[in-house]
Image 1: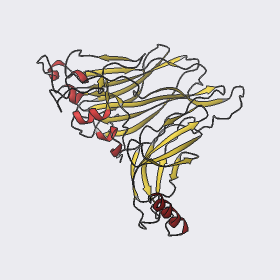
Image 2 (image 1 turned 90 degrees about the horizontal axis):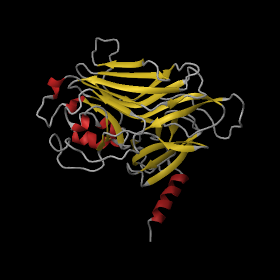
Image 3 (image 1 turned 180 degrees about the horizontal axis):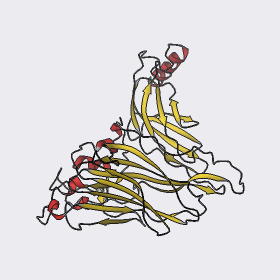
Image 4 (image 1 turned 90 degrees about the vertical axis):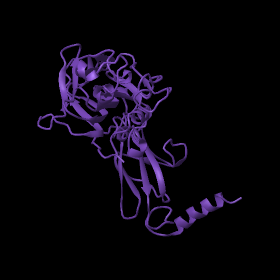
Length: 376
């Protein structure tokens, strides 16, 4: 399960079925990138000289989506895969780097993402090896910046923009993270700073699986915005980013697909029925909650509808281990939650199949349906 969870996302808004109204406003997704559609290639050095050994396909690339820009201050120095910001398969990153809490961010069994591509700046792995025989530490600090494409703010109300993203931050020594925005090519404005110095007002403690949510004061009349993520450090740990979403209040009634949602850790009441917490997804009308017996969701056992975010009690299910995800829906589309969680249903009344805390006709009916289905 996640050890570190955070509150996320803005207001739940109904956009499906609305009649166009002049000057109506709705919070809409302006930009979304989770790096899952990027073609990943073979590893070069990581996993050969510094890790598990062997060349693997579809695990890493220095190439970002169109419009993104990456700067790195020490080109050619350090482990190839970690020279500045790069995109890697999250599970491979975890395995080839020896975990060290990276699994919190990327493994379903830990409440992580398990979604493929993740943007990673990993100073700890960067300086473990250099093909030129150089000591990366002696070359200077690893500083790298990752900038989004220009995000269209046409018709977006001032002071209504919100930036959300998934973050894995493990700090050490002099490590710093900075988030900046700029409008229409102007000066960069800092909106977030984390340091690893616990005496600094900007100190941000170890948090390897959280969601960051920042309100942005976009000025009136701005037509575009860029977001820049900077990792500044030496042989320190890492900052990994996924599922960058920018939303804003748009004039007019045109809708778009909902933003991402997030499932938080489950709780159990006295009947043993699982209660999950759904984060609010921008523009969602409702949520489909899916339970499966495997992390790939190929063996789905139940699908139900939550009308709103917040606590949701899953309808009765037999004891066992399940994986749960949510799908945010509206009339323009659907989007899976950017994580899933593993839950254990351990009802003290083992044959309370509908999970209502008592034995009754409905339990017998469910049992007989399953028994008859298994008979020749």
